[in-house]
Amino acid sequence: MSLHPETFNYLNPSDRQKERMYRGREAAAGYAAVIEQICTEGPDKTYLLRKLREVAMWVNINITRHSDGAPRED
Image (spheres, rainbow, N blue to C red):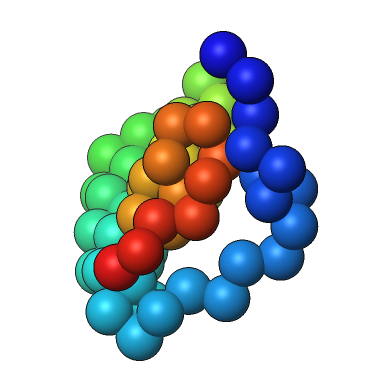
């Protein structure tokens, strides 16, 4: 698979995409709060929270780009 020429360029999300991204961040923040409450401190908890941040970033990418990096049209 080749990457789209716009893959690494800045992409300003549409208003609709921003709303969807906000909903994804809210869901991730809620799950992070649960992790904070039920998990003990240590490297596993740190890993969980870092992976959750990564998942939240991938949600944004899915909302704004196709798998080859091409911008999504709303």
